[in-house]
Figure 1 (spheres, rainbow, N blue to C red):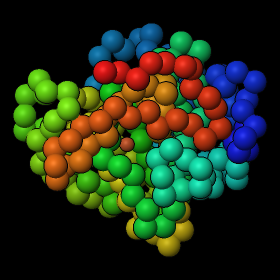
Figure 2: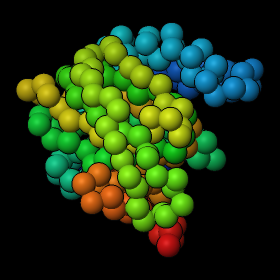
Figure 3: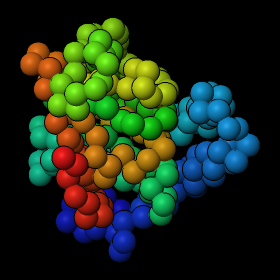
Figure 4: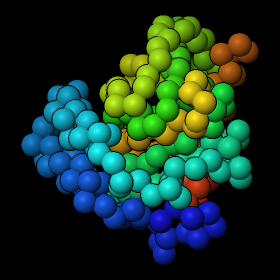
Length: 217
Ligand SMILES: [Fe+2]
């Protein structure tokens, strides 16, 4: 489960085994077999994802609390709920304490993200450079919006893949992420829009270890 310091035996599969989670993962796998286009597939996933967001009782309290030890800082916790053995899919909860904000980051996979509890402001950036320098990015804000419980958005990189979120509710926000990679364990990127700096970023889960992997150069 999600208790700090007590990693699941090997950290893959259903770390939280609830029928509501199994229903979404099984539907995702079914749509993967039947819909080749990422855009069409995430669209087809909307009803199943909305159903999970609307359901109560499936997210343990231990996966819904901040983590002061997290690598993301600010008490921001990322709890794996399901991880495919081959790293091709994951479901996780992201807990962002009141007023805390994530770094500006990317995801590098298609997926769906929705708010389960609380409210978040989301700021989305677009790259204005050609991406040829891995250490620099020229970013411009394209969208700012506020999302509340039950609202969700799709991710289809590279479009709208760089963003940060900040909790604007008095209680921590909890968002649920279904993404086609092992998001917290892959090397992604953290951006500083003011200076243009890009650094490799692996957020890590609060309740599961990442496989050892060399930091990219
Ligand atoms: Fe994100």
